[in-house]
Length: 367
Image (cartoon, rainbow, N blue to C red):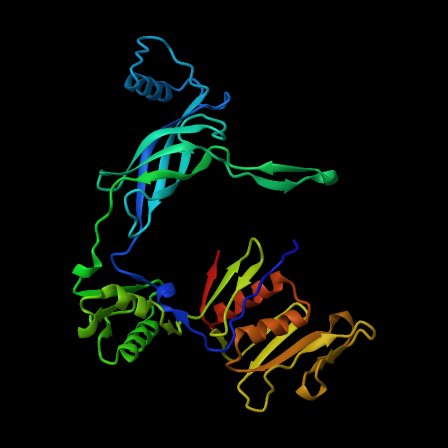
């Protein structure tokens, strides 16, 4: 099986990320809303002989003053759905929200239907928004054979752009807080300490402290006690170098490999097929010594004759030998492996072997 693989190596150049991009201000969080709704106006693609849909349509008509009595309703033009939306922080009454709908009946398509007015509740059971509007299924264009094309989509999950109107605020007054708490998206002790130090340097005093790997608390300076919004704006624009744990992620299904320069390799020797990798504890060994095949001669020749690459025999059975220093970054190792023409399967097998031997100084995550 042929794999395509992507390798992402992080540059050794130090760069910063804004505090607003790597943290969340505690209290300023999104909330989930949900509801049970009815979609009508479907061209025969709705629920078929569904008692739940029929009861829902009867209740809607009864609310409009129409008594269906014992008359049986045809439900093929309607569908019952679960309606969901995300309420962003600091949203105010009158703001519009995007809505998602998903069928819970036997409908084959919700496209071009109309969602009837649906109350959206929070986890506390209170109504925060009302949803209504035209339902749209996002279709994806696909290429077909013979130059033709087509489209594919999940027809029983759809959206209603700006389909909900916020009717109730979620009260959170930052001015009533005695201190600010920043929660780090990817908890890390080093990052937490760097954030606290950066804030203290900016404010000119010891106002911030890292409580743990995920939380940094900030006290209000005397000059900004009455204006916390200005303090938040000042803090969130500061740039901090976010640290991260060394990790290699492999998706064996697609052949994708994601890694960074933090990953290091300890002394080890690996033989895989016609490839041999040796990592030595030697200050005289060059950082990268790569041998590659010469198609004209069938012999293995070093790319850099002064690098000390080793030839092992000739012909198709010859070994491609790479000699690297201990502590070489994984991106250097992978780059060297790629230069030999190794496949993604070879790379994945080598990384797994390095982890099993304990030579890969990082977490290995398989997806």
